[in-house]
Image (cartoon, rainbow, N blue to C red; front, side, top):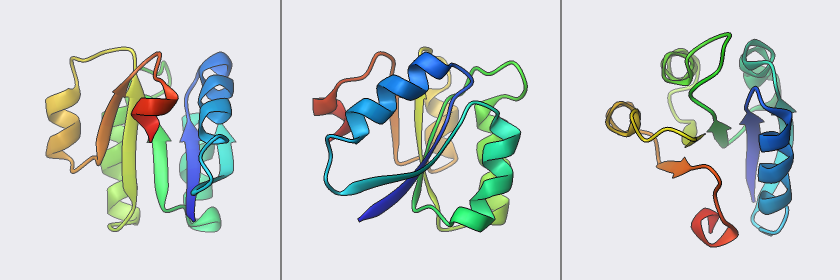
Length: 110
């Protein structure tokens, strides 16, 4: 089972993603954070396998946050979930495992 953390500044987006991921038996959500800094600081404690990460957040850019995450945890997987397709190349250059556009669907998450 994959242990997942969700980081998105929008509570509605977090709830929607939580609902969709709860449909997948192979994913266990172990943390959900609307504050990206709080999510970042919980990574070492929670030890997720995958992080579903928004990009456009007022506190910090998700691409930059992913760079910092990879410095802490080299083997972690990141899936960007964003409303903007502008960052896809940067995301994959960071070795993101996927890039999902909002609103996403259960079929796409699978």
